Length: 236
Ligand code: NAD
Image 1: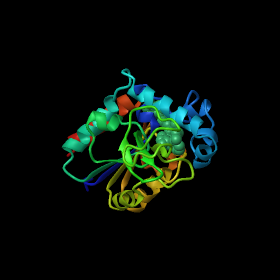
Image 2 (image 1 turned 90 degrees about the vertical axis):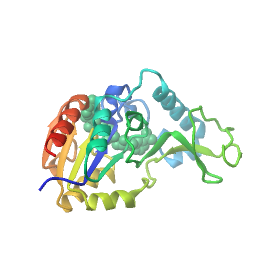
Image 3 (image 1 turned 60 degrees about the vertical axis):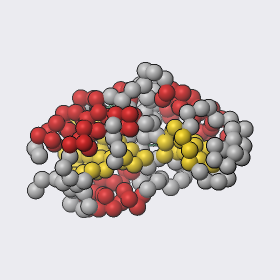
Image 4 (image 1 turned 135 degrees about the vertical axis):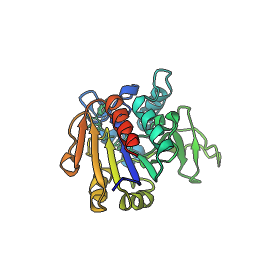
């Protein structure tokens, strides 16, 4: 039976060749910062300036001219455009490289670096500027209540119900550039498998969850993702 409903999950590995560091690789973000200092609600409550500095630095890097979507992002946008069945791209990445490549049926389960959320009025608004402790909310104007619109360790990822429904109904699940360290995303393969889906891992190296996948291809995302997408489209 040919696959009709696809769910793709991406992680930091798909953006690595675009110039963005991954998290757990030897030179990754967690080799330079401690999660507990910059990526938890407790860290933000304790030392908001440090957390703002961390995301200000990452946002500036994302907006630097040299960071651009790569061939893997482009291949997924093409798959979405040409696929005759249902398609959902779930990303753990808080960068916007999928959007820049043209992806539209996209869920940012860990939030978005180019948005901020107001703890006072709840508004989520686009923001490309550095945040400080005094920055006023663009919606309610209260100063000092903004935080990055990202999901920190210990917080609930976004849109889990919609993602769960798609996984329960998919025929093909493809995981790209993720180490399989962070739940609930690391458990998606088991949900897709339980639904009877074909499961494929595309990564630089075997992930922690490799034994759950029926198929795998290892190599750089810019090489293996376009190849895999071309095979899928040719078979339909
Ligand atoms: P990761 O760094 O754990 O894993 C990246 C994977 O990509 C590795 O398995 C690596 O082998 C692979 N890879 C590296 N370069 C590649 C390339 N060129 N081509 C193909 N694969 C390549 O990143 P992850 O799995 O995305 O981590 C899970 C999530 O943890 C992150 O996406 C992030 O959203 C999340 N997280 C981040 C924060 C934060 O910064 N605030 C907080 C909590 C969770």
